[in-house]
Image 1 (cartoon, rainbow over the protein chains, first blue to last red):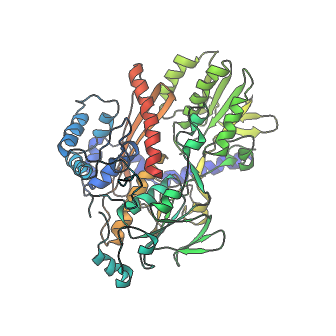
Image 2: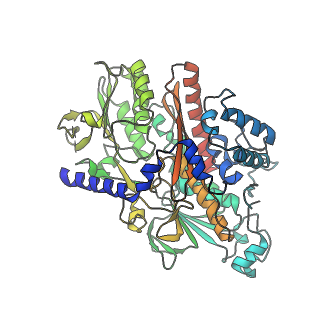
Image 3: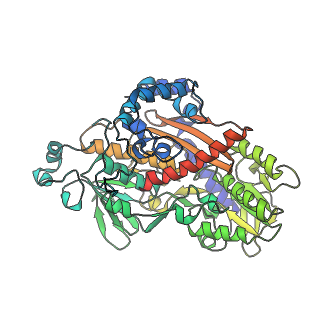
Length: 143
Length: 431
């Protein structure tokens, strides 16, 4: 029983190696080389970049009740200044310097526009009577 | 609002599809049968995030989700159930929000096959559901045969892997709570890609912090099929400081693959694990985390194309065998960690790509972040910042990990960030 399992795993490992020969090589690229390759493609939209922040900062950046701060409705210039300071390791933080360093200035500006355009209102967005709005609304992006 | 214009809708689906009002306040009445129908197989993090973000971007499409279970339990946070700092209730959600708020037609059934020609998914009850675009996010399956004698039946009984949060998590907790004084817990950690790379070590640490209080002479042995792991230096550092790691009094021990750590055989009757080097280890609790592969549905439907994982096109996560089928989450052969945050962010890439395709636009450049957290104890957390940049036919990884930390403030704030992350992430996916 042992041998066939090993053989099977070995075959799977070989398949993985042959299926993606480029991946292993590319994994050794430096941050600068990665930025250079990535620059060949159109910049991701502010929505694409901003929505990837949601796990920590809430849907549309609208988590107002936690330690990690909301981004929805944040002043554009404040967002840009803070992200650039994180990127330059010029503002104390235990996490954001490790997040912000990957973004170009243009990407930071696109995210700033996206979050500035979101209502500064806790997600899920509520009606005045406290019921949940049945119409969600997101601005920004390519549309 | 990111939605199809009335004019675009008429172009795509004909004037009858756009008749009436209320297009952008989605109610069932607002949808015409001619609106694009997007069908999701799998209501885990990937499928749920996709449904939500598609609805945020497009009020008009019809969305159907096929999921056999009425409830979903988050895996992130489930290790903390073992030391009583989290409850399964708190991690468990129903699909009411998707029905009432995101206008998703929930089909509580099991998808069994895809007819690519007819664009239909067949479910176990026999019904065929037609789609314009199909999104499959059915997660991983477990390779029980990597450890001879282990099986899905044993996992559902006295040998829970608890790598899918739910009843097995509760069973493992019960076993830890019933551990005799000075008893032994063995955890077998897999090789290959598996869900949440630091989680086996996080699990060992949660169990250790609990046993330290209630059963201080108990031991935890991690048998590993690898020689290193994510955040290993943090774990070794903290275990040395707190649990006597590396001494003969160690509460936690870790055996690397090269030192004979690979578990190869389970004797369930005698609660004994045999390692690759032939050593037999008897334990009171045996927690085998099996290696992973793509889900049975991904294999049966042909999406895995005979491989262990599902091939995909980098830009839109469409299947390489059918552009109308998109694949997300742990089952996909992506050069990324298998995490909930990755599944959620892949889902957003797919939602945007489908919105773009329906509107006749070229999908934009994808971007996927994985800014994750793990803990060793209530007062020691770690953070990882993975950025996956689009590189044409693949993704390119930029990665930073927090450093091994002696400063109690930095350790503690990262542990608090981890809890913060879990709470916000659950809301982000299920509300």
